Image 1: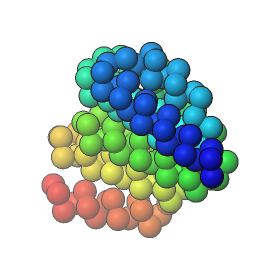
Image 2: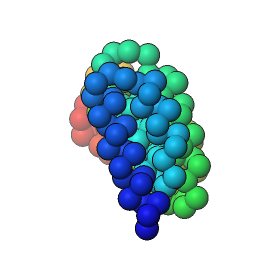
Image 3: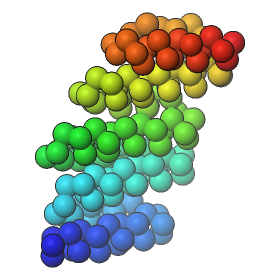
Length: 154
């Protein structure tokens, strides 16, 4: 229990460092968070905030992906990666969301991210790219859903 409280306190400190623009210090502090879920959340927060500020976020993103993959519980790891992918998708970066989805080993959840990326691309007029992604979706139910959503949007 003490590990969780220490992790939460460090997470809050990471948030404050990010708010003040001290990204390198935030990354260093996030490394020391003992709880894997909270560490992953901290690195994701850093990556998203750096990306929003239009600075080079690639190192922070790589560390966020690694932290998510290091979570012992596979379901929690999947959730962390999906959340990160959807953050980038919502920021208007479908390419990065698709790249993050490649780390998701759970087929239905990976497929859901791919489908959402495809729909965003289709909305922005990149229909052939969207179709290519949909055709590559391995989960048949998700593929069918994405295809029907795509058809209704055109």
